[in-house]
Amino acid sequence: MTAQNVIHVQGLEKSYKQLQVLRGVDFDVARGSIFALLGSNGAGKTTVVKILSTLLKADAGTASVNGLDVATHPANVRESISLTGQFAAVDEILSGRENLVLVARLRHLKDPGKIADDLLERFSLTDAGARKVSTYSGGMRRRLDIAMSLIGNPPVIFLDEPTTGLDPQARIEVWQAVKELAGRGTTVLLTTQYLDEAEQLADRIAILHEGRIIVNGTLTELKQLLPPAKVEYVEKQPTLEDVFLTLVGANGKNSHDRNAGTDA
View 1 (cartoon, rainbow, N blue to C red):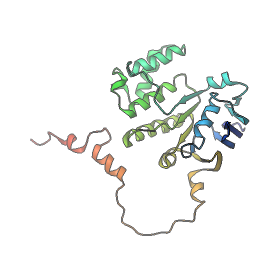
View 2 (spheres, rainbow, N blue to C red):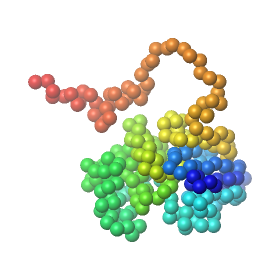
View 3 (cartoon, rainbow, N blue to C red):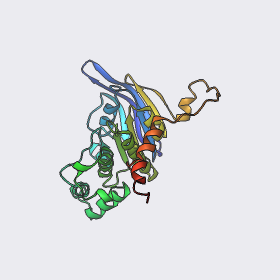
View 4 (tube, rainbow, N blue to C red):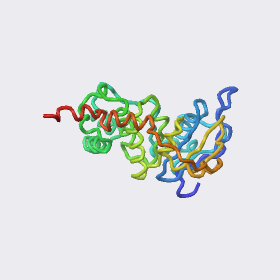
């Protein structure tokens, strides 16, 4: 592993009885980048994340995070990572701020209140900080979940299908939060089955299929695998996403609601 690569995976194999899930997986993730592991359900994405986060042992191959072997130094690896699973691990009875304070206290950090307030502001949740999480939208819960995973400033974060089950607007909110993570220097390994998600977020994309990485590169490099596009003049129609966001607005209120009451 070179100094600029934070995650190094080589020859990773994992089987469950007769089912061979990983068949020799290799990839590297550069520091401060977003790396997308793209694949359909059952491709082995979550298995890779579980091995890298020390929740599962590989049958063969090696994997290291922050220069630490996940098999021989699991405790040290866990100190330098954070894992956000497919479902938000938040306490709905508590408020958003109370969730953050609780995690900061569990990690024995100084001034947990300030840590919570800073993260609420960073993830645009300050106005909702005092509300119970049970009142949050799906996007707000996921943003809070990611904020909780950043307590202690881990240099590496694993996001396992972070937008599963979210509506289009909530997905965009999470995308913005993930981009900000990398912008602040956090290394992000993202698993997803959504092509547009990988296209929007990732610096590099690896496609995992039947337990193997079949391609690994930047979006530009992957597009070069296909014949060049033909130049045609067509009428540009708005996408469904354009229509949805125009109607509901960035803050969830449609243009009619925003303009209501302006006529004297």
